[in-house]
Length: 399
Image (cartoon, rainbow, N blue to C red; front, top):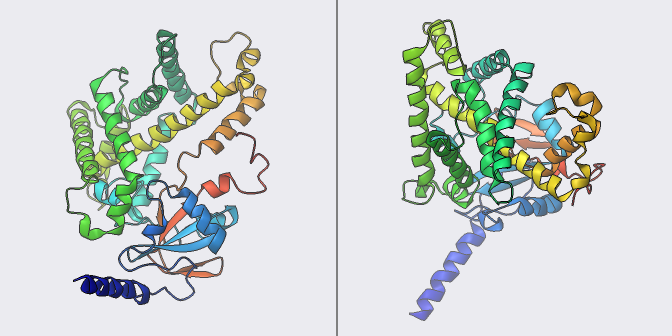
């Protein structure tokens, strides 16, 4: 019996040793993948950032990995990322469509949608509509300052006691987006706001954790009742909440007199219902969730990082000297606050809130830094390598 088991293990070892996953011609170098697993066993699936750095040191700024049988290419450094995302932007503008996050959104929304006519027209619509509602203008600043007053009131109530500032920042950032999207502001204890934030923060943890990587690597496991199923349940609840908001707007809106983003989108559906466009209520439901998540998560995490550094470096808190008794800072003060602007930019660098960005995908066969990359290859843009690249003047400014 023992001899039989040894023979089986030897056969398995030889299988893994000699069966190779073929690499495309002139493909970026990388570690040798194993059958079934690819290079998954070489990564810390809880946080692979250090492994990506180690592999870049060994294979260069453009290297390949396999998750299961799928080839992925990791891009590192300013020069490489500029060539991919600026010089050859269209070649690398796609989004992979067979990952957990895509299946959760059911192909709707804009952040994870593939490059094409739907993405273009929805991006154009969002930029135009958000500008009309004050993005980059004084009216948006007034909304932000209004929410800041609620944050200050919250802080004053908690003087002398401890609390989780991340929740407060999530609430504040979320409310500013809610005003634009839904035309409503919510109290921080409102059950709708608390559930909305809970659903997407929990999904963000799942999407950035080990179970998402397992889902993406092993398609055969996707139907099993494993922890990644929770993300689908959460997404379903969030869609129901979003759909309820859309239905409420449909009952109360006056066509042509939009109050918020939802009304504008419903007007656009009416305007384009006979031209074959991709505007639809189903798309709107996911679009709202996309914009809410994108506008809340990164903002709140950056604010949290800023406060942590300000607390540990009180010597850089000099705003009162510049404001000369004013209640709050505003954008018009920027010319008198170069140091504050520098601190904000440095916080955004060290916060590194989205280290791997959103995954890209090649839209056609292309080349990068002399390597050939086939159409449909998943691209990981390692933004951390830009933020900490050697030669950066402020590489060690914050420890």
